[in-house]
Length: 555
Image (tube, rainbow, N blue to C red):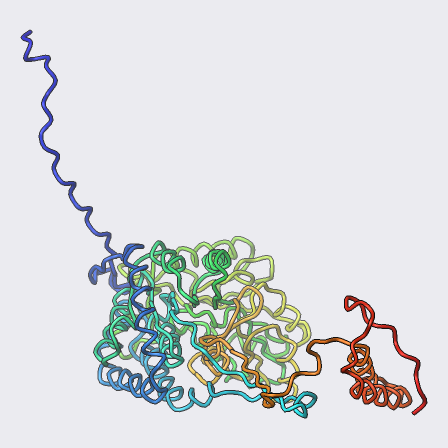
């Protein structure tokens, strides 16, 4: 062996490391299984840069008049209207809901929301005078003003990939905030379309940024220094976001789903209740946080109700969301369909019965189609009655009366929406007031998220905070209290120096104003006046404790 063969090799000049290829999200059509395309996943560094850029843009945006901000948002509405057909097709292809449902549940409500808040948000956010009946006579005044948070991070779900984030973005922007939006990884192209709508409407650069990505992108947004986070999604993810926000005391709104009950009373219009149950359970293939997820029907009308529900369910037309005659499209993603399959299988194994459906559609194996399913012989030991299903499954439980229905409706960790079906509106309202939910409807279900005038949000594990309505608008501003002493040359009576007179004045005022005994009120008024007249005399005692009360004089 030669010496050269064992000599250490001379290292060649180090080549620059190859840049790692960007991670990509693949969007798939749930109806056909076809690949729609790819969207690049944003890095944590890019998300932080977007938040920093948004903070700069927000300063100028908040300084503009409300009228100017509203005019800009109206241009977004006009662009939305012009592109309604294309947007409906995009939503149908990527989310799976029928085009008709894309218009009624996603596009029309946002056009209306922009119209409504553009005309009214300024009045809702105007200064609020505070009545001060006690201190007003001292020429004091207070009011509340509303200051935008700054940069709002919005993390959107896949079940309503347009309507939910668009509503939150529009309201945040009208209130003077900037927004960084993270769409769902299952519907990234709808998220990109939202960004284009705003950009093509002339919104200032950096004011609204769409940061596409997966869970890591959402985590990066939560940790990027936003002034508020608005999240719609599952309870486990909502808990993680709540914990992360708590570390920096970042306020958040969390809309986390539900297990929404429907109560069918003995005096209900059974035909209308059955129609409502079928639509409420199967619209968007049951993938609605406010879906009718469990029904409690009073025994005297149960047989009639069930017969009608089964007949209407079997008449539903399931198929391509691009077909104008389709009622129910596919589920959006395979992971969610597998959860539904497991929940139904567990219920059947425990004694439940499927009156119709209960399995994947064999007629459409390429897509994520699960047959609309009606189940009976269910109870609260089963996941289909306790856990959020988020799929086309309607379990129906027969109960002896409405009181038992209310008790079971409240036997849940969720509290988003509920519905009561009755011809007696007074009785219906009494029952509704006993149900633990953020929204309770009488002879209606699901739809009030589209009524932007009304607040949306839940109790218990359904989340914290509100979206929509005046309450939702107020989630995007901080209340600032402004107080005035309108006697600029007059010191307050409670300022230094303390004295026996100050103590006597306020001790007497306490009795005069708040005592339940007339004699004490009269004596207190006298002491208050006497203390007021002698308040300039500084007590010789220690100022760390109240001075001894002077001997009382008869009035």
